Image (cartoon, rainbow, N blue to C red; front, side, top):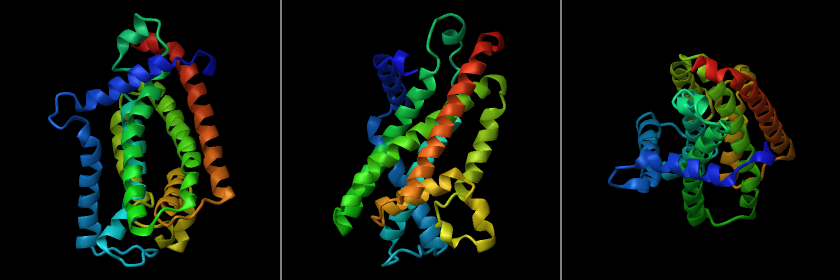
Length: 260
């Protein structure tokens, strides 16, 4: 795949996908900042202000500190959810590229992944700025690029798989919308994994997002470097996702034209 990678084509499709989301809106790309801040304010108000939830690892238990812990997991999940939900109808929505044009279809999931990663990266930079202002800068943040890479690869692998399956399973979009909603509450976004009852923790740990969210939160908010074991598991997950997604896409692609 790398030998036929076309950076210019990937860049053009990624840019087009990102700009198309805000085309015609008055605020344009400013929504990249407004949307996560509005979501963060809403969830903080509901879970901290109304339900009175506390974060065990927080020191002051203030709404701002609760929001930081919440934001670290929520922004990552929104990136995952956005790519997954859009991938299911990605190939189906571009029939001309399948039936009439010789086009490297694998670029479409890649472009969506890169475009969706932009709001996530902006959210993390906003989080780092806030934490740095409150607590100061630390060297452990240098680990961040080593964590972003496997997450991008894992999501890309899932996007390839789902984009290919979506051609054959037209109900996949509706199913994924329900599953991602359930997964949001089954992932340690609004609570740490340690808050889950001991009898259920092993089941919650089977969720690949659980480890990734916990590691990102520890790094961004608690300023703790990831362990080599956690880093190795995250890279192993990325390798499995990429391999499974790429092989599945290549195999299922042979029948796209017949189905569409």
